[in-house]
Length: 394
Image (cartoon, rainbow, N blue to C red; front, side, top):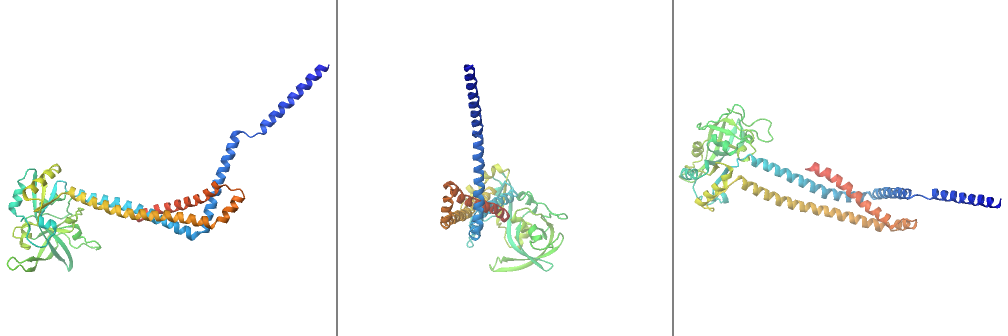
């Protein structure tokens, strides 16, 4: 009987101990719960940090606004400059694509250097034209007389450059050239005139300057071949055609008359001002250029190709963009210095506040995060507005 009672007692004690152990295990938090609680506390701390940082920026509105403005100016300027540079490059490439890739523009060395005094080193006449036309891989040579006219149409005055050439060969220089309806090319008409789009439709005017079939009075100047004095004369022309926009300013801002008329008007005596040389294809442009240079010398004659124009333009754009981007970078650097200055001043002003936070248990990481989040908010607000301002400005 005693043994049985002892056994029951032991079993009872074991059961109680087991139940107590289970209760203790149940009351002890699991690792998952601890991690979740830690994560919640961390999220709560981050939320508190950003709320306090935003409140701190609102308390110092003027200083915060000026700092954000520095970021906007720097970032917006960089975005706007990049956008404008890309747009300008696309525009230049589009314009150069309107030129035939197999065309070279040839001028005398004097004209190439822009020297006003002295005769040209090489006189472009029919002999030079035929010599270049006989070179290998040359498809066509288009000699051009140049000058300027003052056009009077019903009392309205416009100035225009003159291209005295065979108008039927304009498509060789500008393959995209088209005429407005009703136009016609009359190469043998001494009074016929083709008018570029910019001359016919000057910017800022709501009505055309001239229309097809209209008569215009042209006033021009020339050097008297006997006395050398500058003379002025006038002559009437009929607008036989108006060109649609080509994207080539040399054509859009000019009028075209035939060779014989230009030679007579400006008393050129058969001496051309320039030539357009067309190679059989773009692959032979360099070979033709080298042949012309070998014959006449690089100092006596200038040959310009669309590729050379594009390279010079791109080099200029690259240098200009780099210069402006440097200015924008300095502005952005000033914005960064402004943020650092603002935070440094903010720390000095809030030393007592920092001490109070540490006294109530705030950790150093919490206080550091508070100031870093202020910088982050300034950067986010400033960069977002910079994107909007820079995109709008471009």
